[in-house]
Image 1 (spheres, rainbow, N blue to C red):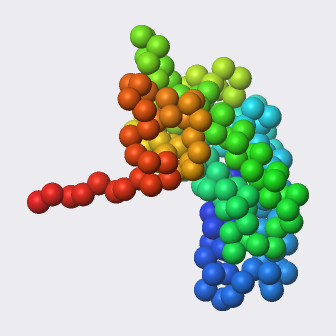
Image 2: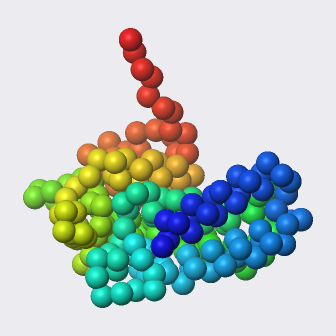
Length: 193
């Protein structure tokens, strides 16, 4: 699945970072490019990613934030789009494609954000319907719900954007007070004892 591809790509990047630049390792580049193609192919036109690809007629079709799937994929796409040293071998055309996929992913995240009864933006579910963007069940024990873990990860991803537009700012700080931290400069909380 996509989570496994994102994990394998990240492990490859870490391993490559320990053993030299990716530009000198053709096997790594081939595997990475296959994984990147899989990520591109699996993405819905509206920007979300299913839990499983190729698509089947089951819960694997749902847009999935569970287990950091979307966040891991999006962080990989951002690294590619920025031409990070470890993936500097990716051609410019694929970097642009990665940026476009990343931007569509942000759009899907924002479309999935749940509103409360008053219309206020709140959080996200683990899985969302790929057509309506509403939270939905997956396996029999994964009921439609709102979830703190996935919502925290998605919020951190949105807060890391260097130039967030109004939709992103509203998604991060839906109470209307604006972006709570300078873009891309989220500081971890202090632990007081």
